[in-house]
Length: 395
Picture (cartoon, rainbow, N blue to C red):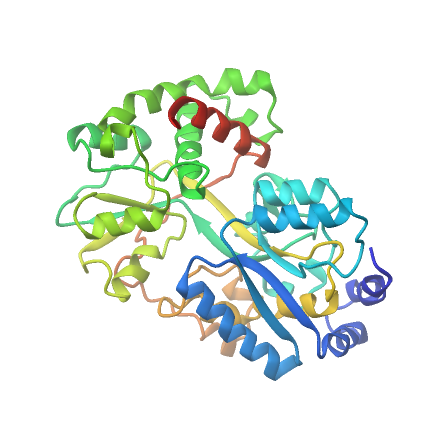
């Protein structure tokens, strides 16, 4: 950890309004913060442009969005810098991250921290009602990343074509067989594709063996061999009923969304419960589209922002992350007209004037009856699941 960071951070944990936070803001003045974040969404990109404008006006911090196609790109860069002995002045100041990428960075000492719970706006985070704000794919966060938004596996369809939704992975397979070629999922390692197979895994594990606890521990070859056979049997039976008989898979959920809008597919998948509402508001989906989650619960997680161990602008990065946790920034992010990404804040913790920023009226396409949130399996399960999927179905 660099001396500058230590000077900023050590007193900062003592009090939300301590003089050290004012010192952090003063040190951040004039700093350029390179936030590495997925750049594949116009809404996300526009939101970060707004945030950059606000940060410049309020704090004199220049936020630069480094647009990624895959978070692993930035992780690899930080890893390479550490291997080369570049312990300060790194190219990544902040990073949008969760899951196996967080697990890798935390275990390899690539993150600054703990810092998150000393940010002034962390006082508003819903750590009780949203426990994934402190647990990332079953790995304790321990202050090494700041929660940014909530996500839960969600499906959506046009009620004119799918009047009754399939409410389990078994029901989804029955639906696929009744409508051959009309559903699919993205090819892993696309995030939603991997989520699809993990959703099947947690449901089948609960139903067939009750050994779900193994999924929340670091993966072992023995656990993988014991737990996954029902998953592969499920996919073997499902794939012939999929689009192009499961011989090809779309690369992105956006492609599936468009195919659904065109009538080629009947069901789309997302990890944003507000995705269908966003699409309706943008006139990209019919106003008869509705969203749902599985009756037994669906995978849920929090996505986070972290600061690499060798960030060039650690004070500026703290200021950026604290602003993105503010009620104003979180309310704007949750607005369906802007991004529609669910907030990590607890409404009851907010002052009344800040609470009013958040709309509570259900919009067309939003999930009417949210399902129980199922915690993500431990992040170490992702790579072996994807590798085995590619071996079996990726040719």
